[in-house]
Image (tube, rainbow, N blue to C red):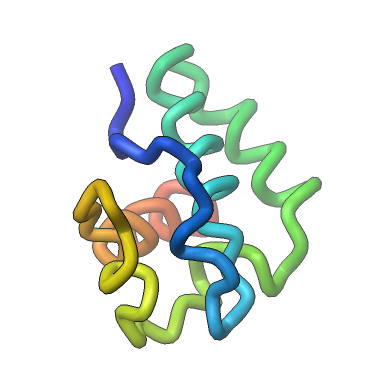
Amino acid sequence: MTKVDCTACGYCQPCPSGVDIPRNFALYNDAHIYDDIASSKFAYNTFLASEAKASTCIECGACEEVCPQQIGIREHLKEIQKVFEG
């Protein structure tokens, strides 16, 4: 079961602060689909550039304004930061 109903459409990109929102959501969803947070956390911290991580979100909300799925992106990025960077 996915945690974020993101279709990876890319409307939220580019993020003003450089967050790769679709990739963050994909890793987070994979962690829950496969019940393997450790592997997704490893991929997040190894393969995702520092500026692309959830923690670089400045909460400007530009992504949420254009998201056709009306996802609460900022809140999900906070969750991702806690799980993968905490």
